[in-house]
Length: 113
Image (cartoon, rainbow, N blue to C red; front, top):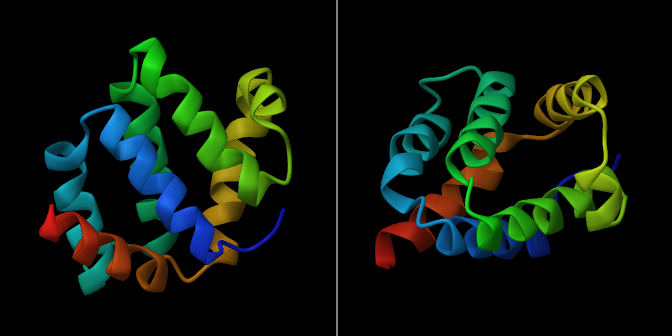
């Protein structure tokens, strides 16, 4: 697994836009940016919220594309991950990254839209 990169911010924004998740994710992103929530929990909560809410097929692919980058897999490989591997990967993503630094610019970009 690799650390989050600049391109991941835009992949996250595309997933949020396709799933119309902006309002649902604002509180989580604000908590991440302000440090109100444990950073590992922010990552897991944010990604699970996207997965839970993004039940429409059009948004599903964007979520796979977003996760494919840091997981260093293809979107198809993300789609077929077993649930345990997905959850372990999300936990690692939260532990290995400064999610406050990731979500702060994301929150700024979302507030402009």
